[in-house]
Image (cartoon, rainbow, N blue to C red):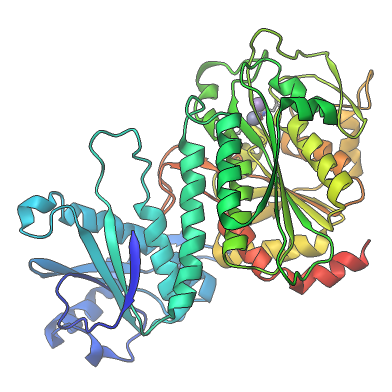
Length: 512
Ligand code: BES
Ligand code: MN
Ligand code: ZN
């Protein structure tokens, strides 16, 4: 979808128009007759979607969507509560945007029969009683909801090709910065949706390195021999049952005047496919495991977006890539691995593979970059999904209270929310091993936490935040503007965090 800023008058516009109607201060500006306006006001309540949702307290979402025929076009009026707190108003507009996308497509099922430009779905957006942030949120929801992974479809589903946004609301520069972020989300979704047959560790690594080159991001690519030389026992063990070699990709974005002296490390789980290995996943549990590299794709997307928009934060992304298979010489339960940092790990279950490759990546970041903060993103545990479902990220932190709080705040702002699980000392006993320093999984209880504990062991004293995105990275069915399939969930969160990162940076440093 192309987005362009234009000046336009909704009363004379030839085409479909969306009008965001926040409050009633400027009724005369509306392209509606007095009768229509009276009707709209009278029915506003009745049309409201009665959904009790969104943050603390029960705030009913009374956003309503009304379509007026202006044949051959339509006018879509989104009535929303302009008085609601900003994060809530913005989220309602993202969700309303999804409803507009669905309605728009239903209204133009077959463009060629309409006498309009064949295949060219386009729409213009304006509003009254609405602020720039709300318009941006609407366009964001619209972009995200209009995404489709249609690479393998012979007949492509309909898309909105062009969106005109009323230039009264934002500048070209502001729009472009947002569009760059949204394009990264689309790129991430594409990567995660691709099956392993078409995106293995080698192909993904090459794509990362090509993209890095074109964006002026430094990229170091480690092949199997170099990973062996580094003695990354976790990554190598997980890779042993696969014919595809592992890769380790390190991306570095170093802005001219960074706010941080030492880099912020972003680590992402890149299991290209998770069969479970010899502890093979039964029945349907293997479905959707092409998404097990979502953490790596998320962190790459965040770093690329930061680079494209010149955010002043020095970033390093460490991305371990391999699939997890039960092939020929696959690693087995009872194996003892020596990890990059020298720790030994007893393998209890080969399906707890993510933490093994992440452990090496985290330890590598600590040893080679001395980062002031490490954040990882990983589709790590079914336990995280069971704990909070698909409405947020199960998050943990060690020595990183301040940045964690900032992340929580930004999560509420952009509606990609995190909830903290504890990393209390008592949980250490669950991953104590009889034969090695630590084992790769504990008992059935507290599965998301013992996974976090395992990783925290490798972060040592470095402030560390762990994001278990297993519940949100890939949706089996559409969830508002997150279409079915890969979501890109967490990219907006981390980008927003980076935009305000210097707010806590002092405190992070003084802790070390
Ligand atoms: N990739 C999975 C976790 C997962 C499950 C992600 C469902 C998305 C949806 C991970 O590698 C895994 O298999 N975890 C095991 C760990 C267990 C063996 C300790 C799990 O959660 O069952
Ligand atoms: Mn697994
Ligand atoms: Zn996995």
